[in-house]
Length: 250
Image (tube, rainbow, N blue to C red):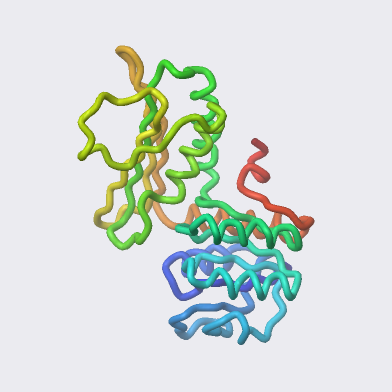
């Protein structure tokens, strides 16, 4: 049995992970951390320093502001950490990478297996199509999402840019620029509205033809399923930085 400490347990993604874990005989959520605690079937603390239980893995779907407390707790107690929160700045990502030198850290902008397959397909398409196709990424999310563009959109852009040895720049806003589209850029566009769970498109626009790769999440359950699979992987991993490619085998 893998004992889990769930960070962000009282949020919507926390609820999805709780529901998914209830159907898995190998996963037990023994405690939670949330800035706004509510009554659940396990103890919930406001901070990591207040946690009394001894988990095998941390699953984090919370807020960027909790990162320092999470990493301090995880490194001090040698507990593997799965970080699925998005919106981190470069300094915070550096802290995550530093922690991975001491403990196993699973860090992914999107825990859906499907979106990570999309990422692999986008890389493959970029390698085949080369510089003859313009690349645009469109992401759509609910109206309560705080960060834009989404971490997943950046993940997709980085994957494609890796094919071109990071020579492409990212364009987030063209309205103030009167110019033709340069070849070496990736356009990234955000839509926010309603209750859209998460939709991503990678568009390759060439001469008289367009190729579109897309993924649509129908519920938050797809991210919870990926988190449970990653927690199982992480529970026996050695110190290091991991992502969904370590599960799907890319």
